[in-house]
Amino acid sequence: MLAFLFPGQGSQAAGMGRDLFEQFDVARRTFEEANDALKFDLASLCFSGPEEDLKLTENTQPAILTHSVAALRVLQQETGLKADLVAGHSLGEYSALVAAGALPFADAVKTVRARGQFMQQAVPVGEGAMAAILGLDPETLRQVCEDASQGRVVAPANFNSAGQVVIAGHADAVGRAVDLAKEKGAKRALPLPVSAPFHCRLMQPAADRLAEVLAGVEIGELQIPVVTNVEARPNKDATRVRELLVTQVCAPVRWEESMNYMVEQGVSRFVEIGPGKVLVGLIKRLARGATLQNLGTVADLEAVKA
Image (cartoon, rainbow, N blue to C red; front, side, top):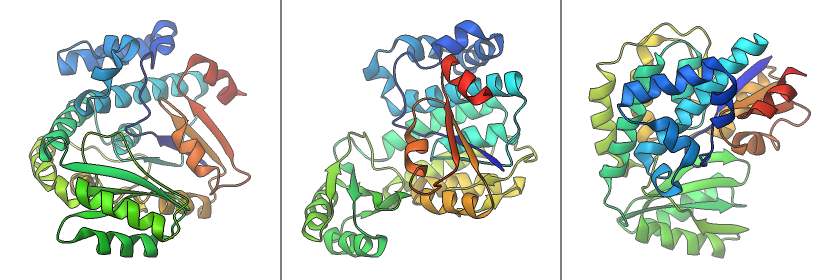
């Protein structure tokens, strides 16, 4: 079985997608479609930066989605590969839904730009934080967060792989949790350079506003099951897509469970589509013996074809 995986925020880099744009008409049309939908030159931002602008959440989200969909369309055109399951990390779930046929690309790119704006505006800059905790089991980490909260918010936000969990919440509570995690034996506990505390209940204002946007987006039938962040199980019910995307904003990303589910179902080949190699790196520990590939550049295409 074959799975396509789509990256989330943090995988962006200036230059992303340029060689695909220059070599393949289908990639160029994808970037042009994004430019038209957003009414600004997203392609130039992806190709040339500046990095400071590319890192703004409202730009990062449509940029990664557009590169991912451009790469997907090139892959489909050049290889004819069809996935049995798809999944995306946080923002990447929108790319997965485009791949599954549930979201028209133009609607998806406008929605994730709004999502990025809502998430950035939900918590004033400096009040929220995220941190990566390595080497603590989930139960110990949940207790660490509970002890560190002291009336504030701090909770697991991304269960990425065995021993790698990201926490999010109020900056002071996250700071206490980092110190306490080290005391409890974490191998590493380090703050992340993000602009907002994603996937915790501080994002509720963003979830409420996103629900209004999604109410106006037409959801098509899913041609491929999407293993969702919220449930770590496949969804093929179009009527549940909006609810799952809204819930996802405040809920933890259950990535490790999602990947374990895919392995248990017999997936033996994973292709990460879009910028970077973050997801392939995470799954190495979970899917030993599986074929792991990524497609973000023209050079990657030859390896995937082989």
